[in-house]
Amino acid sequence: MTRPPESTNAATLAAYDVAAGAYAEGTPAAPPDRVTSVFDLLATHVRPPATLLEIGSATGRDADLLEERGYAVTRTDAASSFVNLLRRRGLVADRLNVLTDEVRGVYDVIYANAVFLHFSRGELVGVLARMLPHVRARGRLVFTVKGGTGEGLSTHPLDLPRHVTSWQEPALRQLVSSTGWQVLELTADTSGDTEWLTVIARPTV
Ligand SMILES: C[S@@+](CC[C@H](N)C(=O)[O-])C[C@H]1O[C@@H](n2cnc3c(N)ncnc32)[C@H](O)[C@@H]1O
Image 1 (cartoon, helix red, strand yellow):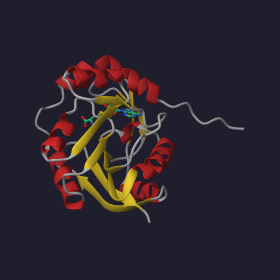
Image 2 (image 1 turned 90 degrees about the vertical axis):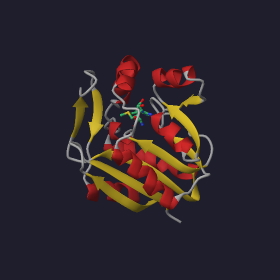
Image 3 (image 1 turned 180 degrees about the vertical axis):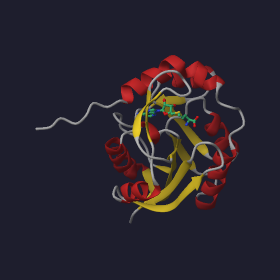
Image 4 (image 1 turned 120 degrees about the horizontal axis):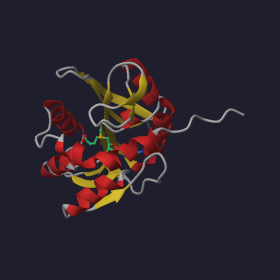
């Protein structure tokens, strides 16, 4: 029997554990326009107040802004460095690795900005399927990944290897739809030097 390829996620998380400070320093306090646009788009689907589970909160910038907009945000990350950083800010944050841990609770929104790009295609299939019972029937899954082709280790901009998978719209749409989600939005932002794809989906009934 062929064994599945070893996950690269442990190496990615190890990089974040070492470089959380550098990542935080490189994260502008004000979000880029593309992130604000995602928040605006989300608000057309699920208006606050609503419960929102954030996967991969990192510095917590998006969580803070979503809270300001009226969402009840649960902050999580798989990297203990980021969980500790959030806790040092006096915030409640849980350690949650969506590849290996069970998600608890059911939310109006699950949000993951620039997180699922760290997963292989096979890992993303598993994660999307496991998110399904944790979003209410009328709720939404919102996530962003990088547009493009290929997957592999990237050392930009942290100087430490992290796995990155880039996506093209048709393949991403097909994969999301195959895991029990109906894709409601799949938008591309090409305003910067990186293309970002945003998916908003709801559970298929
Ligand atoms: C590029 S950063 C994005 C962080 C934040 N969402 C933002 O936009 O600034 C990727 C994040 O994904 C988290 N991450 C990577 N693998 C994960 C996993 N298996 N489960 C949950 N979070 C993970 C990392 O710890 C990191 O916080």
